[in-house]
Image (cartoon, rainbow, N blue to C red):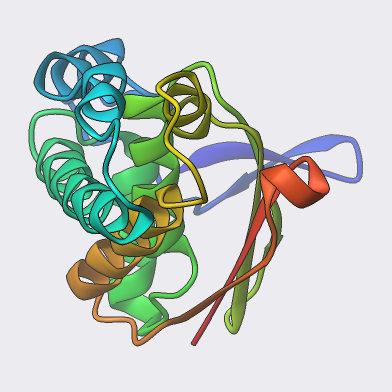
Length: 193
């Protein structure tokens, strides 16, 4: 029995424990995940390697990077850096049969934090039909601009990472990008099932 509160008074209720006895699990991102991802991928070096390439070629290279970053993020998030949030999301999905958006959202958020911990982003909608994400400060886009890479080939990075996460979760997604940093000051992604 766990003590809970109802109408300002303590009551005993059967509440689900958020931890397993003897097993410490964090609710927040372990900094080790960031260190592990950043040690394997250097966005600045990738951007410099794309100097002089056309947008199509740069898109393909960034698509591969997006897949690789997400694959590593998923591997680390589900093993070495599993946290309470991850365990609870998996338990709820298993019990309810509802995967989207929370399982995909977890991987997307961890991927952003893992490779680009200083980026500014926000989840603006999360329902069982649609996930909306805004990115207003993107280190990938900034690195490409600094390297003189033209266009928006980083779209390939984001779309590929979302698709890779969806492959893992088993969600069949459709992704749209109605806003971009160059035109709107932010990239906005609408991911729907």
